[in-house]
Image (cartoon, rainbow, N blue to C red):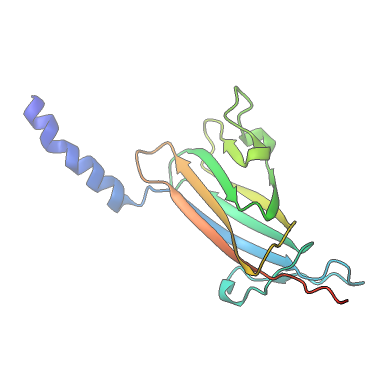
Amino acid sequence: MKKKALFLLPLFFYACSDSGESPFIEIKKLYINVDPQAEEVVKEDYANRMDELPALKVGDKIEAFLSLDGNGAELKTFKLQNDVEVKTELHYNKTEVSTEGNLTDAEKGQLRFKDGVTKTSVMVQATVEKVESNGDVQLTFYLSSKAECEGAQEMIGLKIKEEKTQE
């Protein structure tokens, strides 16, 4: 009996990878507010053209609307990691997220979903707080489901520029 079970084990992993059960993250909208002091705030959607993102400076704001999908399985956790130059805030449906224990900590960018949640959306607001030199900054998102499959990862790469002070 054990030999038969061991023989079937690789089939379970193969089935998971081919069945498309892995969760996925889709960036639905990505707004950049490149001049918050302007009289008229102009937000441009860069979700489908991330290679055209403008270089950001201190005070610029980013809003990313994410669609999280367990691909048929229940969602387990969502995690946001960001570089220190960017301050972030999560907005989500509080009725879909567990408040038990310390599994959810929105300030640390971590959400644990309640049983039965297979799809949801999250909005991430980010503000560039400091720029020490020109370079790249990342917002990275991780999503896992209760299926025994690999989780999903999505990243938004942001270019930042140091403002020259006039003397």
